[in-house]
Structures are given as structure tokens and as C-alpha cells.
Length: 98
Image: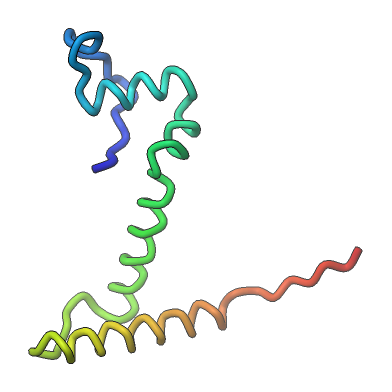
């Protein structure tokens, strides 16, 4: 799980011998900065996925209506197709002129 440490977080007493996940994140932030940590840990990817799921739930709804797994799979595929179509309609088309 990738959770950014608080800005006031400090290393634990066992950070040198047995670092926890939080200690490793803090050490990486110290070495590479917060943006470097986000790229190395994959936090940016997680953030993008969370935003996409939130968008899907807001537009389509957070509940499935079908009862069988096969129909639920189809329902999700249709919802994703509709969401992608809506996003494509709102995306600007840019053309390089020079």
C-alpha cells in the first residue's frame, strides 16, 4: 500500500536496523524529494486510478444491478465504454502548427 507519510513524520528508532515501510518512504523522500518519491513508489499511478474510479462512480453509480458474475462483468464493460466515450467527447483535439 502506498500512502504518503505526513509532513511531520520522523524515522523510528529501528530505522537503521529494521526499517518499516514508512521509514523507507521517509528515507526515499529525504534522498530524492517528495516528487522523486512519488515517481519511484508509483504513487502517481495510484492517484490516477483513484481519480478514474471516483469519476466512474459519480457518473455511472457505485452499485451494480446485475446478480450474476457474467452479467456484472458485462455491465462494468458497458459502463467503462460509456465513460471512455464521454471523456473522448470532452477532450480537446490539438494540432501542432509549427
